[in-house]
Length: 102
Image (cartoon, rainbow, N blue to C red):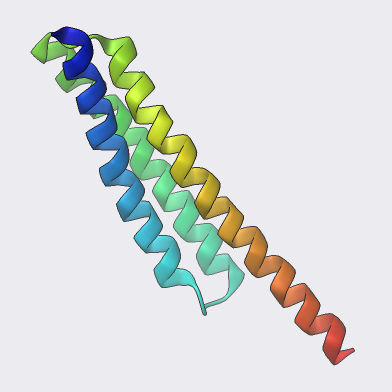
């Protein structure tokens, strides 16, 4: 039905954009912290475009739009938490290294 279709669209789009954003963050590791923050920003922009496009597609297919948004943002929250967590972990690790050098 429309709810299941909406949930599947949202989960699919959220998972896809999460994988791309996560790959960008992983590629930024080992580079300056600004590269990681830039990767997180690009991931957020990608998700902004993707959620709008997914809602339009869901509307055209007759899906329940609340289910689309719910599925998408469930995956968004998970992915964004991991990405930001990895950035903060890098910052803490770099701060510890600088303290050890001092």
